[in-house]
Image 1 (tube, rainbow, N blue to C red):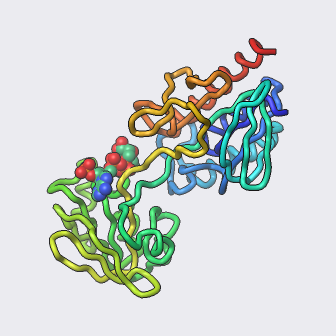
Image 2: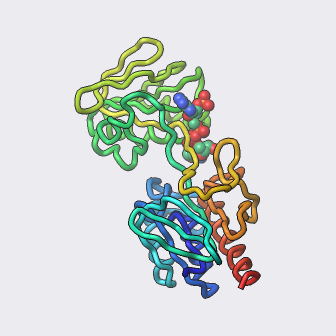
Length: 298
Ligand code: NAP
């Protein structure tokens, strides 16, 4: 039985794991895809102390190696469910079952979808949720970004260096992105702002070829980048875990959930500021609370 199973190998989860092993605990991280979390899709991180020029990928890879070098075990496996058992929890994955005295949920968030018919069918065939991941497929082509926040603005600017034409489609008559980003968008000749419009239809044969807006305008394109915010990854759930109305795991700065022995760290927690620095901070706090719990429940 592990002392701590951390679900999610992003900055919050890996930091929690590092704090756990450094307190001499047996720690397993379960990660469904690749360590590093959302940050690996960021080109440059400029707001994390002492690492002014690091890329997101370098950050994720360095953190993973640091954790492994300190003795953290990492398994790549999708967690289905957590169940209470005598003395702890059983974590069921796609391939296996693991047990631990405590669990730290650090599953982060996923991109919000438009919830349009064909969106899933065209995902990876024209519909994308990450310009830094997929932008390169659209060299010299026509793409659109949906969303009006800072992320959508960044995606449009990034894509305008690759694609021939970029539409930025937003449902309101003004963007909520920062003024500095809006100035940059307006300065790019190949970015067209399409305001007060919602995408209502995706069509094409094998891949996306066209979108329709609720203004009745149709746009022929090769790629659509959806950048309309993120939603918490509510799976894996443990029965009885308290969630906020918008489905984040409810916990204060101490990262303690309503279930004894279950802790939460990072973007999936109810919090004010979802940033790299607050994710790593949560990881340290959740692990410290798990370590305290282990001491008190020997
Ligand atoms: P966000 O600020 O929440 O923006 C999401 C955008 O998507 C909003 O414009 C929203 O429209 C739109 N939207 C939401 N649901 C939609 C739907 N179903 N259909 C169409 N449009 C929809 O999210 P974000 O841009 O991902 O940013 C998240 C946080 O990270 C923000 O606090 C942001 O400032 C921060 N961030 C900062 C930077 C930076 O460089 N400083 C970069 C990236 C992110 P409405 O405007 O109508 O609500």
